Structure formats: structure tokens, C-alpha cells
Length: 155
Image (spheres, helix red, strand yellow):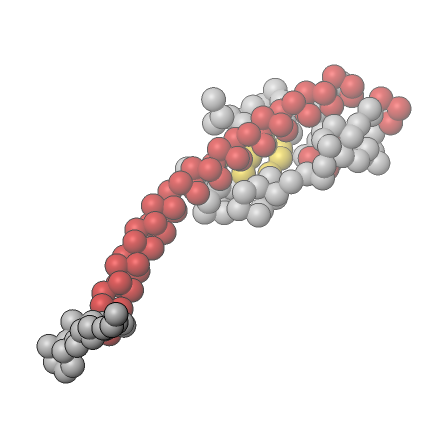
């Protein structure tokens, strides 16, 4: 019994079909496709993040409404503009009757808005003269512009 091994010879040189690596053009083509996909994802992400920030600010305004309502029930009035939203965490020093303060009315420190700026507070309010205005300066950071998000704009 004899064993034989048939050796298959593969062509060597320019006609060779056995490739073990990618060419430079193939690598560049794959990189170009990945860059295009990444740029489309970044462009689509911007508006989604903006909507999420606006919704987050509206939610926080609702939390302030609840806390300010509880403050009003205890104190008989809303914090003054000078006392600000900090009166929801710490009793103001100028309270006529400090024993009525039953806070803190917020579980954590007064948060910054989604754009890392402090919320604005005014009492009596310009838009709500019988109570207060609380608002975020919005994406542009400018007061009094159309992108401000306030308790008078929240539905």
C-alpha cells in the first residue's frame, strides 16, 4: 500500500488569487464609509439632544412648581426674588416667622438647567404677576429670547 500526496501548485505572481491582506484602496474605502456613517449619526444626534434638554427643563420647572406650592402653603407667600429658589432648600434669614418654614422642599440642591446655567426666579413674576416666574435661559443663554423655557410656556 502506497500513500501518495498530490500537491496542488498555486500560481505565483500577478495572476495569483490567494490574497491574505487588504489593499490600501480597500482600507481607504472602508474608512470613508465609516466616516460618512459617523457624520450622519452626529448630525441626527444634535436635534434629539436639544429636544431632550428642553423636555428636561420643562420637567424641572414642574418640580419647582410643586416645591414652591408647598412653600406657599407653609409660609403664606412665595419666596421673594432676593430669597430665590435657594429658599426651597435653606430657610431664608429674613423670614417673619421662621417656625413656619417646614423644608427643605427640594430633596437635592437647586439644580442647574440642562445647559449648566442657574434657573432664573422672580416674584412677583412679569408673566405671572399673582405668583412667580421661574425659567431657564434656554439653549442660547440669553434672557428674554424666544427659546427661554419658563413656567408661563410649559403646557
